[in-house]
Image (tube, rainbow, N blue to C red; front, side, top):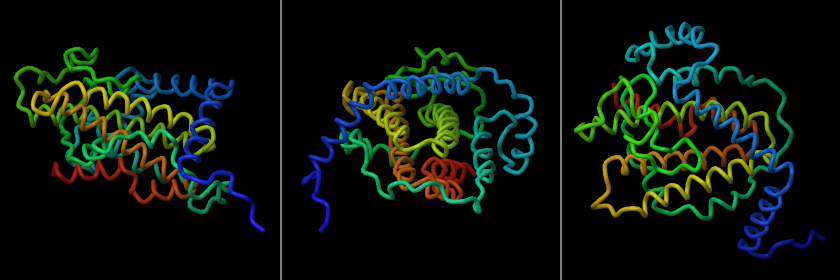
Length: 286
């Protein structure tokens, strides 16, 4: 005779998941996990924003060879991280023993229930990004908790070598700001890949849930701050990239929930959402 069902409806299951997440957040382990996630995110943001790193010279030499094969990228293009990310996927050994078993189809975290439908509509709009832009630039507040929109002229990184903020044509502005988003997106993907391969689902879940919920709140706040007719070009760009970041995080988390081996398989195949996005942008730019 089978085991009696613990929950009878989907709503009951989701309520239980929310309660479980609440208890975990309030536990010492949950607090340590969140603090560590914030520390890593802050450290990553400093690197993304153009801060110095200890191995800049070695990376520059390594990237020069990669750029030669791409043909169109300048030596200090932010897209270097994209080409490097694809090459370093070889560090996964396809003949390594399988990882410890995890639930094949763990339920989506409770935060996903609160994602607006129009966020996914925005996420699937085409994004422009220039391959000719290098160096740091404004990130529109999309990479710093609480992920609230910040206009380029109010962003600490708004003063950049690319002087395009005043009276710039909309397509150019989208491409330049999109290039900075791609740089941050790829840095986050690399950091996430390294951590998600070696960390359990239980520990990762609270981090992902917290980030998705905060990003959705920030996106919804920007959406509700103006209507479509009065929305500025920068707000449009913020909604577009904010939605894409959430969507890609949700998709990648679904793959990770199926197990480490499945997750690594998607990385090797080039089918991760951020890989597909960069491939599309590069193809459009040729």
